[in-house]
Image 1 (spheres, helix red, strand yellow):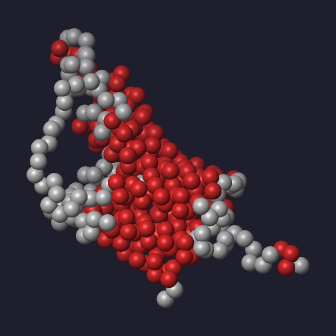
Image 2 (cartoon, one colour; image 1 turned 90 degrees about the vertical axis):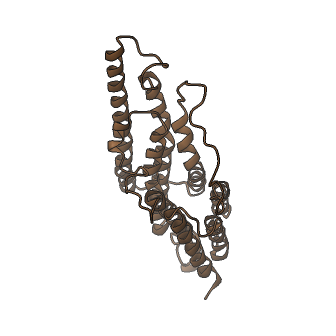
Image 3 (cartoon, one colour; image 1 turned 60 degrees about the vertical axis):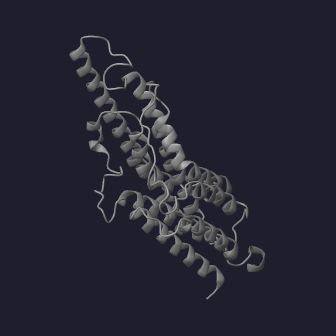
Length: 298
């Protein structure tokens, strides 16, 4: 077997091992995700880097850094210890949702941005329309979730005002104010929406170059915006009743003792599959280029 396909197979095996570890909340091997991305980079070099040759290595670099940074703890680590809930400062944290979303999406955002710069060009109108249609559900879901939380917060504040007959302040009521929540919601949805729109734009550019496999990976990467969106909104303080519209939160698929993290595992599977498809689709000979140079064909 040639070296390049073997490297890709090994990268896929390591990705599966990482996903299984996430599913059962017990990593089979801590470095499975890191090794998967490292093997993917080795595959890209062995299979043939596309022009510009720096694009794929630079795009994979932040993904490797983030994989190392978020490597799961070893067996037995963190089983005991103190956990402190809350703090002496009761001020509303408007950036909590944004911080949660950015922490989970910055590496993918940088990778997509690098590939957008590397493969920039015009997309056909039909593909641009298809990308806009594909982005509509993501944008709509973000709008529905944010509006639902905003309405729930406003209703909760009205209940508190009715009970106390006073003006609600930060120190009273359920711990959040509509004036604080709205900016926090807007900030929280920005990173997931940016990832979805950038990934779909990349899919259009890759499809225009004949890279359908890579375009599929980019489109799959846009799906990550949905669980990231719910995770970001969950970090914004809001009434529990507003979570009824969360379709991609960690509890969307009920966890069990055997599979305690099903949604997280599906998210990891979609993310790594997107990277595998992207790299496999852009490496090797340029499928969009003619097989014979124009001068020789005459």
